[in-house]
Length: 271
Image (cartoon, rainbow, N blue to C red; front, side, top):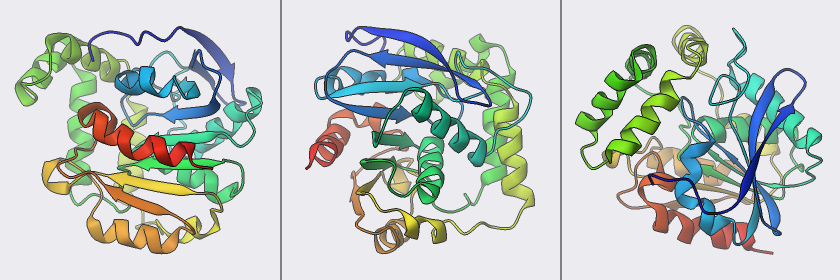
């Protein structure tokens, strides 16, 4: 999507207690739905689905700390830091039991927060969030760091070569987003993944006590959730549902828009 959504919006800067987040608030009268983006991205990643979702929900779309127009502290870029910001954001906006949808890092943060606040959301969607350490995690982070460290024009050219189906405007916008991200966002998580024991990804999720859906793509087409992990997620998270989008990528809301909406909207609107 090369242009902003048609739905009117305002940007507010919301102190969470440890950082100030830029939050885009879209007009709408439905239930509040918080959209949480992945690493090296920003709230603009949700543009392809905003107008459709805004017909049913009141959308709250923050940029994480270190990303987009939010505050960029020198450190504090581990999942518990983002989860603290999420809790502070919900408190500051007086959002009680909102719907929450998190992509990748946003999904990790949602699960971490929900495992400590098991009743605080009404429903949650976790979009293609890795549920184990990526086998090439060092290479993955090194690639992001390289893209974030060079001039935006060079990064846009990289994207154009790797994703020839993207428009020039899309390459430019995504390049500007990642090159404006604080490098600590990548280096802190890289170091934690490379130099710490493998965490228990599933144990804490047994505390979650709200309807939760994992929607994921296929590893062969860029997804980051193995089918075995999806099965274990459904067996571990009480009352959860799991849906795979065939041929789906890691960013289902951007690359598989209609299939994604067809799965998540009925779940989010269920009574």
